[in-house]
Image 1 (cartoon, rainbow, N blue to C red):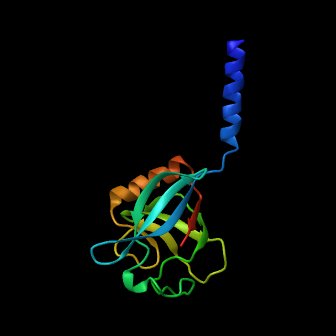
Image 2 (tube, rainbow, N blue to C red):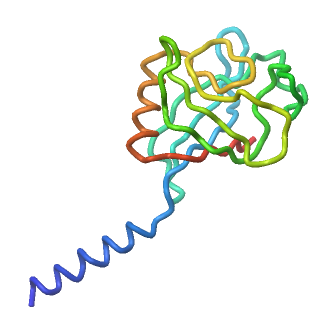
Length: 150
């Protein structure tokens, strides 16, 4: 009887896990700044409403924060609010690149996540160790979506 009950519980847990929403990334502006005044943004790995991990990022220089976010060619503004398809990490010279494709109308293009600072238009991860950590999480959780919240 105990084995049967245990098997039923394991089966229910597996079914519940297989129907869970996949993890995604959310980009949020914080009130904190880097020493030069550039805003610190937070990339958060979220699964079922719970933040699993987070990384500091740059989404444009201080002087570009209030520019039109949907205009292109690039004016260096932060990414427009909305949902993006996120590509898997891939080599990009000596760097890593994660492609971002907007899932809404915009003339912005060539968007991604990579190692840079200061950033003008992409999501920039200021150091390679942090970028590697983010890339590992994207692979591990098979993340394929990013939402720019604010």
